[in-house]
Length: 260
Image (tube, rainbow, N blue to C red; front, side, top):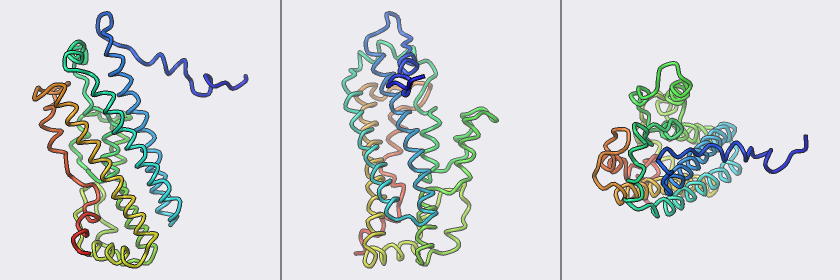
């Protein structure tokens, strides 16, 4: 068969994936579904890019790693822009179909949890939200036990001859990594003496910044839509989301700012 635009992209199948549950259905439910489905597609792409980036770090590929970091940051900037569209949904428009969401909640996004684990926010308790033995549970279990992006970056630095302590390189990957003064000293030296690797460091900071900006925009969008109400699926809503703000995923790169 001849490959066409529609057959290659599975357009017919893709456009059948939006199923509003409200009566009518309510006009604005399609927007809500479309935005969140597009988020999941971007999460898939982010996981694809970040896994590739880890392989590049493991192989010592500096230039391609930097290129991939810039692509990841561009994706996050796109996610931030999509909040602009979601913010056109007024509280009354959202309430017109909110009850149909029932127990569904964004907290149940296993791809987003994978991203959290990949960035280092390891928390074994989050696996309890997925049936043991299910594909989603297995994926998160693997992420929980695997090195993070930061671990891969530190391994890359060690491969470049930088003095990264063994205790940092061979830590328990299922736990949250603590900031390291020894690593921070290495980073300061890199910023002063290794322009290319310092550019990679800044690209990591760009991703961290964009991720925090996206979290903030998401919190304010939820707050302007439902206020202090409980979130869908029984989540605590804005209160929980606010607790996630201003937590850098690469704290060592922020800690050194006052040392120059």
